[in-house]
Image (tube, rainbow, N blue to C red):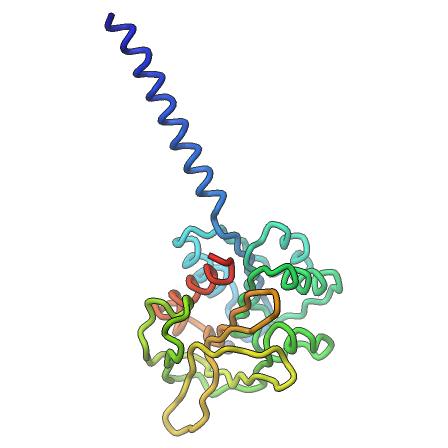
Length: 241
Ligand SMILES: [Zn+2]
């Protein structure tokens, strides 16, 4: 009698184990796949993008690949939900440039971080016009300035302190009149200047979900909760979650 009861109990136990394994596999399958592209000048890409930002996103459950080989972008994009460009080195291959635009036209997510919001490439003006909504050609000297959340109801600004002071390079990012329109979520300002620039914004591409993050020269941003919250929220929003 006892043996007969034990066998069904074992079977139920085995079924429960296999179901929970399936559930785990299913939720792993839903992990947002992020491709971070870095490399170029003036920034420690390995430390802040390959290292700290990738870790910030992995802690949130994302699957992150980092590359400094811009020739590999087209190869990785079919397995990518959110393309996070931080590089200021050129993207030379026409195939990779086309793949990025096709990725945007397919309604995928893009994040353009600090160095990638510069006017980096004279032979590729479409990048700034269509994807970045403009760009920066100068910045303040590295130092303290204030960030102000101007849209508190957007998913990207969820859980953010409304106003903080941090240390970074204040990019003088400007929306170009003929470029894709933008929606500003966070602005920056500094004592002694009446100029206010967009710090975090959405580029209103007709298909893609694009976030501009002008912050990010070094650990003054990458290491703090304010920036990490923006990055995590941006990846989720850009992935359509
Ligand atoms: Zn910088």
